[in-house]
Length: 457
Image (cartoon, rainbow, N blue to C red; front, side):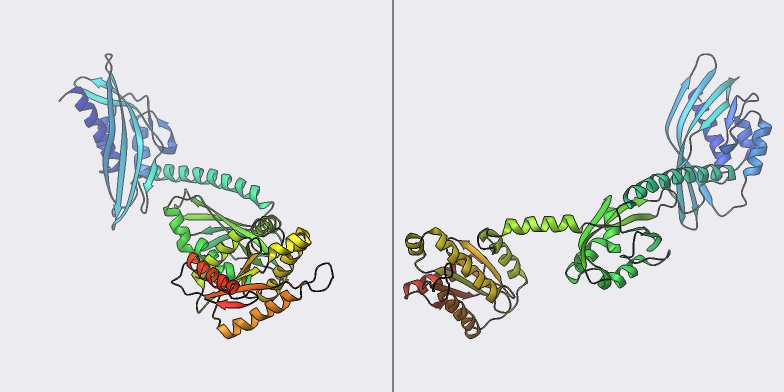
């Protein structure tokens, strides 16, 4: 056997005696009579075989049900000419009890001295152990387990302090703050700033609480989105995808019946001590900023002159509505008759007044149950979801024709403005392009047939 092989065998025997066979004689046989120092858990360095004997005897557990096994990686040996050698290696400990397994690992560094043909350990140091999987005690000796637990508590405390700093940073402008253990499906902590949100007792089930309180606090149109984002299943999926944060904006129902825009954000963390999946959840009032944002979007979607949707926004809204519509929706196109003549004879300001008046008529008659837009120039459109009959729709459109004829300019007498209307009914098999074309064809026939009338495709 070569010196390298002898050194590695001493290393194997020492680790086996301490972590598998629990054989004190095997350990002592690996040690030199003169010890520089052996690092043993929180006891630090011991410098005699008698010290090793006492520490080992004190550390033994009465636990014969757990089976331990070892494997080794990255073994490096350096032999010096003066009769000394160094060995460094990774030690992997597997503890198994009733099919429950703990796997941990640490780095071991040894100094050995040559004694005749043999090699003996005169100094040893191990890194702090790292648990990669844990459900049973990792080590058969108490001092090793104590070291591991102390390390985990230290790391856990440092992690907690980091999260506490984060909590303090976000708490200043939050409505509510919660800590949730998603692995156990329970709230652990609740802190409220004001009386808008509900207080939650520790150990309250998270999923049940969310579902119970949803109708009370979240507007009906936002509830599906809220659950889709923050349900227990969605959060667990986010952990699996290694996401760090989830966020959901929604309309919040206040106790005084007012509505505020809120955002609920969950920062996803893993407890370093227990391994549980947890979340720091906080609720913020974003009402002022959100309303400014929506106002800007609204302005971008509106025709500046008439206040109805511009063409792009109208087509987008109709396309979205078609995806949800059932029954027989209707698509209406309206064009002012002889509009160029109005601009040429009375000037563009007069023409602008007519456009604004017609937009107002369409909003008054259709805005409650439809979508009104300006397609460009003197052309307007209305989309009516739901089910509509030709007779009922004709009656409403005749109101439009009548009110258009009564348009006044600058409080003068009616200016004999008329319009032509084309209508098509929609079904779920038609695209917006086809619907648009059919309504345009109907409008063209209304123009060809004498104007100031309603034509159905």
